[in-house]
Structure formats: C-alpha cells, structure tokens
Length: 340
Ligand code: ADP
Ligand code: MG
Image (cartoon, rainbow, N blue to C red; front, side):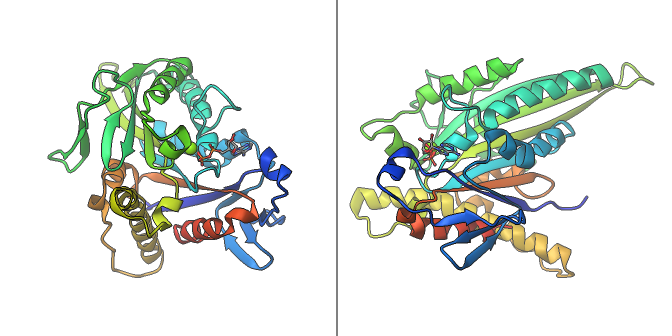
C-alpha cells in the first residue's frame, strides 16, 4: 500500500463588503497559470496541490479536494479534512453545515455519502450504517455537541488495546439521509457554548470535529450468507484560529488559555510535518521514519487513526486577501506549504 501524505489546498476568500468600504487592498492572488501557486505581495510565491481564488465556488472546492476522499471512505479508507487559518479567513464558511450561506464541504459530503451508498446498494448488494458524532475541543477540554444532557461534562479519551483512540461516552447518532445528518450538525452548532465571549471570540479558540463512521456489510454473490464488514471514518475539522498559535505576550489566565490553544495547533503542525517528512523519506530512499508525535495534544490523539498511515488527509488553508492581515497570511502560507 502506498502511503498518501497530506494534500494541501489554499483558498483566498473575496474581500468582504466592509473591507471594500474601507478600501482594503488585495495582497494575495492565485497565479493564473493554474499550477496551484499563490503570490503574496509582488514577489513571494507558494506552491500547493490546489489554489482557489475569490471566485471559486463551494462546489469546486468540494469536487477537487474532498469528493475523492468520500469515494475512498466507502472503500474502507479513513480520511480527514481540516480547515486551517486565521479567524475570519473562511474556515467555517468553507466547511458549511450551517443553515445560512451556500452549502459547504459538510453539505456536499452529506449529499454524496448517501448518494454513493444508494448506488452501491444497487450494484453490490450491501448494507450500510452511517453514524455521526460531533465534538468541540475548547482549551484542551472535549465536549459532546450532540448531547444536551452531558454537554457540560468533559469527555475522556482513552487508547484501547489495539492502540485506537476511543472517546468514552460520546454520542453517536445513526443517520439515514443527508437531511438527518445536517440536522444533527445544526443541533450541535446550537450547543456550542459561547459563554461571556461572543461567537467569533469563542470559535477563534475552539476546534470542532465532525466524524462520520461508515460501516458496510456485504453479501457476496457466491456465498450469500458470508458477510464482510468494512468500517471507516471521515473527520471534518474546523480548527481554532491560527493567530492563536503565533500570539505571544499574553499574561495570566489569557496566557494559560493561549498556551492551551497553542498546544493543539502546534501539535497538529508537528504531526503534519512528521507525516510529510516520512512521505518524503519513503519517496526518496531514506530509511529513517520520523516519530509522529500524536500524543502531544488531544486534537492529534483524536485524529490519530485518520491522519497518516493509509488515511487520506486534506488541509484547506484559508486566507483573507486583505493587506491588513498580510503578516498572519504569510504565517498560514508558510505553515501550509511546509505541510505537503
Ligand atoms: P472563520 O471561520 O475562519 O473565522 P468565516 O467562515 O466565519 O471565517 O468567514 C468570515 C466571513 O467571510 C463570513 O462572513 C463569511 O460568510 C465570509 N466568507 C468567507 N469565505 C467566503 C467566500 N469564499 N465567499 C464569500 N464569503 C466568504
Ligand atoms: Mg469559524
């Protein structure tokens, strides 16, 4: 089995109305040749697997980077899609799953999973179950977004005897249609506690993880009683604002909080770097296989079996085009281009 490393897309959102009103200038553009490059300012080029500009539609983003993962999910491969970027850069918009805006990745995934399963049911004589779980990781505390009764309690993460990460007591809902799946997501969104901080402030600090588990049983034609079972999962992750990973100089409680958020994003960065180094050393004839530090934070523990190995991983790095955010955009482009 060939190891697939991390594929990276960058998406530049349009200038927002208020940014146009305040005459923000565009500082980052897709290079027109279509080679997956973006140019920051006049001279800094960065290369990615895909580069999407302000006119790229939600469907185009889905079709070029996520649809292939949905197909391989049904073939038994785990996958992760995560959106990385500064607060306000378009992560939540790109993932979608809310009732406003045009549908995003989550909406397209919901449609396609059930469409493809229906097609396979006809062709291959299979039975499938889809389960969804939805969790929020806020200051290294994991909470269930699908269970109003336990939402205030912290979920415990354990490793089972096979070395898989399991979350004790997280609710898994069986869903049988795109509508049911999106209904669960909306219910979860309503449970995100925003406390004293506003939604934007809250979402800049929290990671949200939507997991779809697909369980397929198939009866072979030669032996109708024989059942083979295949299980796989897809994680769709809306990460904390990347500015949290570069912010320093906070003190006291603020410092503790930003340190906790840093833990997650920095650990994820280290895991991705180790995976792409490993991919590189396999492709060359290098024999060293760098240690992948999954255990350093909860986000990497949770994603462990869907990052690396035979899992397919796509990172969508979201950036604002505005020159006001050029410093953070540079951070994000550097982080993302190193991930490949
Ligand atoms: P984040 O989740 O990274 O903090 P949001 O997804 O909330 O950012 O996006 C910030 C704002 O920009 C929202 O008002 C959103 O609707 C808008 N936006 C983001 N990406 C796009 C896009 N590709 N096209 C149009 N509007 C966008
Ligand atoms: Mg957001």
